[in-house]
Length: 60
Image (cartoon, rainbow, N blue to C red; front, side):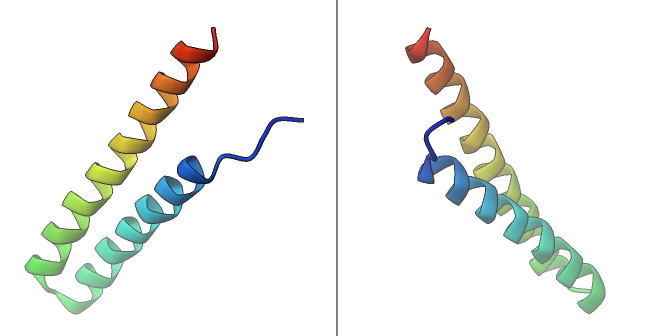
């Protein structure tokens, strides 16, 4: 069984929060919320992928 890594979990939760924010922005019709949520999502999903690549490279 693999060890649970909180960094990946937090990045995933924050990325999903950004996606939820996009939906809320669409429902409200607010471009400001949509743009902020898209930026938020890109940052945390990208951070998660970068951490995963770094993790894989250091364990091999």
